[in-house]
Length: 357
Image 1 (cartoon, one colour):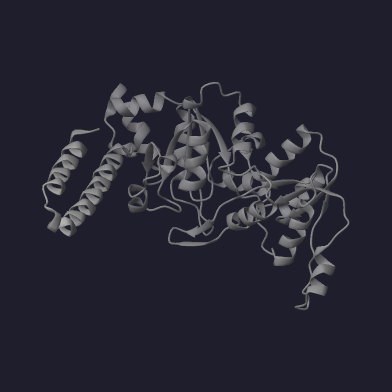
Image 2 (cartoon, one colour; image 1 turned 180 degrees about the vertical axis):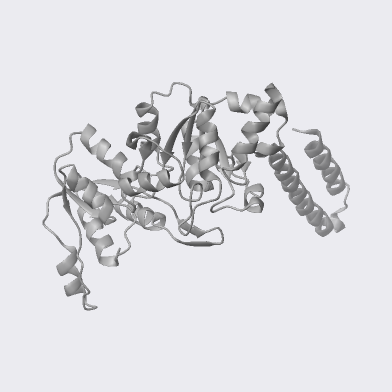
């Protein structure tokens, strides 16, 4: 037991035992106080052990060099890092190209399957980030790769964007969705659209702008079957639109379906373990600490990076503000480093070059 805790405990214990029988009430109050004090001390010790993320621009010249040399792979989110819904984040392209010029391999991992892959690659080009399609990872691609790997045959019920459904169809999978109807508020009508004889073998749920209670019920009906698997994509609880505005994400709906069906979901969006396993295998990463995960969300990007064993860096250009970051107590979502935006890497790498000159 640390000295501080032991000392406090002894002091309060002596005070309690020194009280006469007539002072039991006072002793009880002291005992409560001792418990509260011990709780405070334990919390203080725990807080003092929580690692603090470091701003990359505040590192010393030697620390910057060591950090840059410590990773080969860069895995990065897109929304909130390269762009927000409304606009491009200033300097993001320059930051990634500075890392590429420093010899780092770039791969982008997004939970956003609403935008088709071709559009995403084209938009990256507009900010001077050119990558091969194989280095863009998103839920629909990961789901398709998994289904192919297990030689899946059967009907898929999809609660997802048209982009995901079209991608699955393009690869030869049979897709059904719906019901796309407005029903009367009666259980007879409800059962008429929820109950289905279709031999569905997998339910895929991602972001669907037109999700309804009846589609969730239909999915739950299929998942009652022992041979029907549950597959998830994006699990974000909030979707940043701008730096100061977020809207509800699909994560809550995925959780409801998983809990109601009592089936373990295979999650192919961040921070899913299925995605982590797929990624490590795809890139044959033997030493995960030689990779850096960059993102703007703690629960999706940083948690995912930690799950993979990567180093982690949060940019403050998306869904998290600095005070929110510094108040975190969950070590699973606290990054090793942070930056205001990707543009900080331009200055960072210039500093490293100057220190070598």
